[in-house]
Length: 384
Image 1 (cartoon, helix red, strand yellow):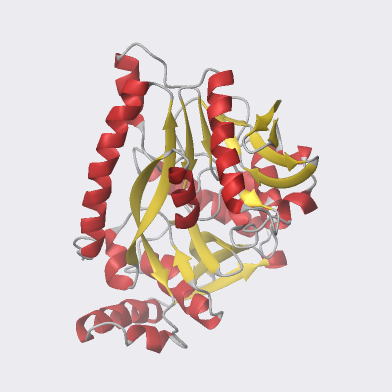
Image 2: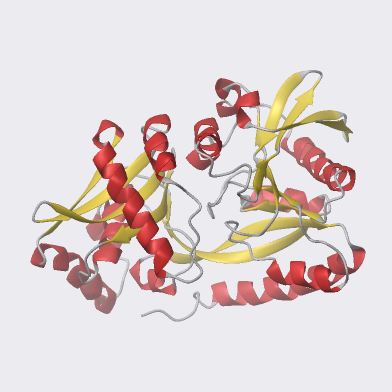
């Protein structure tokens, strides 16, 4: 479907699948190398394996921006029939609109599916005018919401600069909080430990030594080392963790993990923990050009501090060795604070069609932003 022209004279196409664009054109956009979850290969694998599409509540509706017939930008976008797998919670907004006699779904989101990781959401061709394209994006979202009679449009986990641009052009801005690790020039893991007080240093050393005490060996697998057998373990760990919590949802299937190990070779990293040669735990991560993103983990044995070592310490060591600028281990968990992860503000922006809901939400978001800023300034709350 074609939308446009939108201000300032940008033509937009809505694509039913990412394969409608050549991989090399999408991957040439700025920001893709930094965030592999936005790559053509990731978006295509999620579609190809049926993790999004019919029956999932996620219908691909990617945006492609053209200027004079030339592709200048794109955005991963989906029509949503629910709010699952987004990690920016708007269930109360949906309930309020329902009680007012209006439907909240479907809605439009610009997002990386199932991935609460920060990055650019509107990807642009090098040299393109980002402000101009940001305005074009907001105008496009308004046009799509009106044309398809949607309740709203949402941009989830953009970086701060893009969030500010979207807000400037009329979207309501929301803050969230994650615990992320930021490299302060550490040359070694010992340098990292030196940033803690003696109590925290002793705690981390005790937790890392426990792996030797328990005879657990941890390593990172990449490329051809991620065999079908490893995929079996990863998928079983993923399912076990999903089923452990009542709020857990299985968004991904085994085929996704198998296909992504090939299509995203060099970007997918699997951390494996073995004891006595037996694989007992693992984590599935993505590596960008300057950051590491932790996504899924699980274990079959209850070993003290195994989670912290598999999901945090092992990958922190590697991030330092590789001189990466940050490590985002995922949403939630104030326990990350005492292990070197700092409270970090995340962003989302929102367009709500119903004027009454828009007014109430904007008032709420203003108070919420103030509370989150105070929370982060105070250090992010309690930890263990």
